[in-house]
Length: 288
Ligand SMILES: [Zn+2]
Image 1 (cartoon, rainbow, N blue to C red):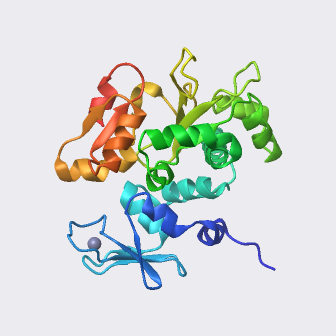
Image 2: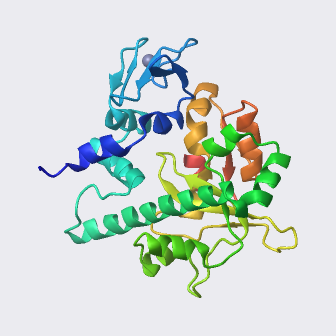
Image 3: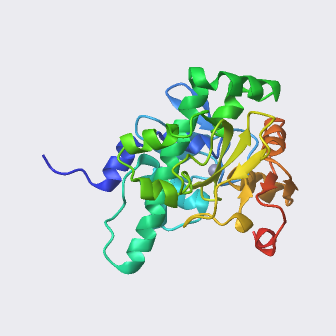
């Protein structure tokens, strides 16, 4: 049997409807899914995604393609950059590292894969028995199931080894978990008994996490990932991946203070809103 190419493996493993839904709300329409085209302005939905073939097409502007061309167009990146992002999503490497600059790139890819794994772990924990109190908190905040899924909100259990065990069981080295900012040098998980808000960059890569303490007696109410090879706090706006299209249409980007405020506003239909990570708005923020 011939070896499957990375491109074919990505196409086979990626959930195209779930992926595109991060950018375009989709509704089922017969055998396909339908939404408003992200590539031209329209009132009526003429953008279709076919889960079976993995292809998408807009009958308004004629744009069409597969998941690779979707990522290229929506994020304005090259084919290789799109392929690397998608490879990270499904947990494979787009190409083996050989040169020194490839090794730095390879470390960034590995950190992103570690973050993607941690994100799934936090999501699973939120839905499990250990996540009951966290689910109650989110319900009190008025977050719907759709919002929790869209923002990929999770829960870091009250066990400072839980994430390490999960990552180790999936072959992730302790060194990499530390480099990704998921585990302290003291071998405790970075996030313990916290509601978890994954931070994706504008191109959708999982670069960091914010964690809100579930226990109100905890002095550090919010903590963020430390700086890592893929994350620099002073340069990141939370939810920019969700807000970018709406901000471009409204010609205005609103910056608020916290994760939960951003999510509440998006849920209320005000989507050109982001939050500033860190304490101050920096020049890098404004340049975005
Ligand atoms: Zn279109």
